[in-house]
Length: 410
Image (cartoon, rainbow, N blue to C red; front, top):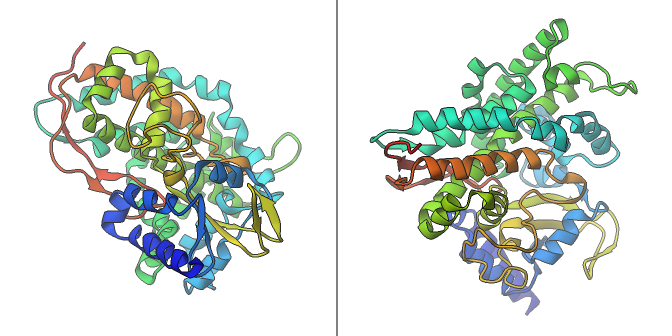
């Protein structure tokens, strides 16, 4: 029976790598959850689909990030020789304490609740400007016209990337981040080219900020902290690349996935339009319903651990399916139903523990301001053609969502 279950899990995980599985992973998640909150694949990887177990393991700091194992298994034991892999897999995203603690502390001041709240007016102005550009009788791609420009403007301002340079990063980041899903020759080659261009640009920008500092995060990062802690040159470029990419890539997914869900559920869109005070709970529900981050990998037990009622032997690899956990019926009533006034447990879309997403408050604020304003501005907003799903599953979203807005309501 154990072998049969493992083979079933392996087949379902393979199905999630297909275009259909990536575009709509939820039927496969349902089948995985029916096998229990966690089950092993044929190679021994533990796949976790239950909410409570995923939440526990995401917070367990004893599980370490060991991306080099997966990279070697995929044929990239020389991963440090590849710019795309080196830039991604030496970043804070996959570092362990105490290195992770040191790196996170050096940038955490930029994402305090007070500083994020201070961005509210600037975000609202950007939302208003983009809404004006959306208005009209002709179809427009929501991703290109709103879901990308909003977060890239916000993180670009915060980090200090000039507005004239920001749009060039969308395809570059997409190619670079592709290694989170696809580790093969062509994918890594594209990531290498993208990472080289990103790194060269940020290295030049950092040099300019050293000469002429400004009131932005990159200027703050190029000088030592008050206690003398600092980022070396490679750490600085890696950190800047991660912050910039993560600052818009996942929020673009949240905005695009969220609008697609609202268009599919006009009753819920009407609810938010008439009750903008629901923006906070609505954002949490949209994150739960179709998360822009679907899974977390690279976690390994360095020694035998007992966590969440499980015994994890030394070397146990763990994959957390956040998208599956967010629809666990043991935690969320009618999990496949979108309810913007849903109360209860938070979604796991931002991870947990020491690796909880640093930019989560900023992403939430952008969505909380964008969705009510969008629905209020365009009561006749409709989808104008098929959405195009992004390739990959770790980062889940749309590359195109054509809509017709009609005239803007005032």
